[in-house]
Length: 300
Length: 278
Image 1: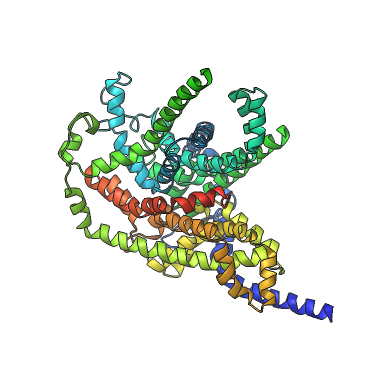
Image 2: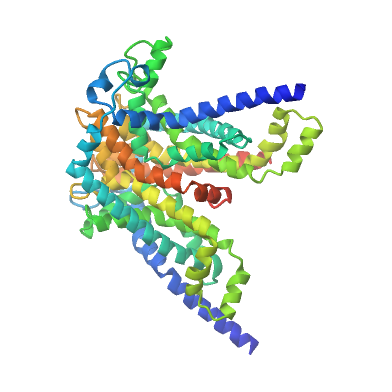
């Protein structure tokens, strides 16, 4: 009897599960399982959107990567962008979080302000920054000019050596408040008694940060670093901001892999090769995450 | 006494730092708003705004609001974001609830599949989706756009929702079952209201992501469906950029999401602080 009702329960559970999962499952199967398989198959083909007739070429797309100068340049630029985005953006986000975790008047308002960069459409962020950093009428550049930091008619996005850095600063505006929020949520769980007792024993602020706060935030730090990597490799930071401000220029100096992959696939109509580059981006993201986790676990 | 003095100077440093950060965070937006009320002539004449007085005019907003393609884009973007969000929240909630609380064959596989799809860069999904939509003659239609955005959002949002619904104690569901409430009913009458913070956060997140998306919108919509963000891009890459009108357009197109974020800041911050998103 006991056993029978248990069986009946399990059966009704499976039935309910089936009903609940149908929409998600249909959608996943039709619109996701297919793309998952197809996008890999595309990397082995030459395919144009105009006729949609795949021509099987084996691993030629992968071999082409090694002789494609633009790909190699975009790869290096992507790595530079990724490094800056993580090495500067994440510590900056941490600093913001530590600051906004202090008690001060208007803290709620200040925290709410951090939501603005996160919610602003990336292309609008690109536009606002472009106006701000314009060589002719950008207020920021003008301020630098009167401070004597830069010559007149100084251009960031037209300068081959500075354009990529300029884009990285723009994406910093978009990402670092998000990192700060994630750090803030990590800081909520920091046991106040430990910090308090460390202070009572005379530990300095720096020591408390190094010995208590930072080790405590390690998991959050890992999450933020991986998120930063994903955003810089294949987020709006690697597409919207690039296409909006420099469109890859000057020359090819701000091409990044993700942007290159989209350009190959759509404007240049090479879906197979574009998919291949998109897979390279995936591989870099996975390697980046694994390396970070490894460093993190070893230190532990 | 010494302690007190130290704490006052500490307080001053704290406020200066906060102001610097807020300056960094807010200045692009505030100066963008100013630009959107300037005349083209005043904008290009040096020195720029904070260094000279300017007259504010409404011309740019009048121009952009009477510009038919922009109005249409605004309506289309609203339609797509609202439809996508509704679909994602319903399908995602049902699936996430089942994965979080029911035992069935293939549960782990489904969970892992959702995670793997989420890890793939959106572009790797976009290329086959465009091919599929073209074959279904849905490329460049609103329906196709909603499909594309749902694909972009569903795995990520389902993943978040699984984490949120897992926090609902199993005992409550057990008790409801005893009372004869079906599980599907329980999801809508108990589980979602119980997890409203997280649910709300994911709802806002879905809407913002769909509204802000450029890559999918710019690829799936070609001629007949141009959403708002591609329109802004069009403005930016026009040969003779009309900066002040462009700024007005940008401010308008970011208005719904920024206002949403500010109005719902308490819920969003509470949701993030409770660790809804990890």
